[in-house]
Length: 199
Ligand SMILES: [Zn+2]
Image (tube, rainbow, N blue to C red):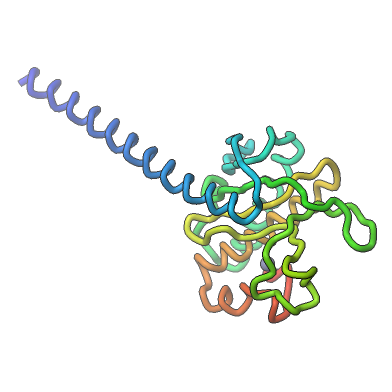
């Protein structure tokens, strides 16, 4: 009897270990796809993995400043608060979000204001006011709806802007998982409309 019990315990420990191993392997497979997509869009590499104090997942060009990580948490906290106000329940955990911190392709906007942005292919923004000649400057960009992933840009100051960008990119993802109709209506800013979407 005791022997069977302890044998079963070994089996169940092994099974749990196996499941954990499986999900870690699946996670790293998904991460590799996200990393490739982030590379393709930004032309950067993302060798550094870290987590925010609240558990947000970060891939970055350089070791992120603690102020950057805190700003990400602040942005997600604002996002989750506004989402709860709208009775949304899905994807309101910090660990649901994978955020890529890219290198800035410019640090000042056309008015000379500090504005670290990435240059991305114009795509549907070609010919709009955003078009800079085949590319547009963006403060952030959604990489994948499921799992939730987006790109932001390294800042050395003005961290409230980082929190805002996180909240704004996150809006698209929260809407995708909680209100598909509003998501579809607001996903493409080339047709007008901006952030915040949720108030
Ligand atoms: Zn947007």
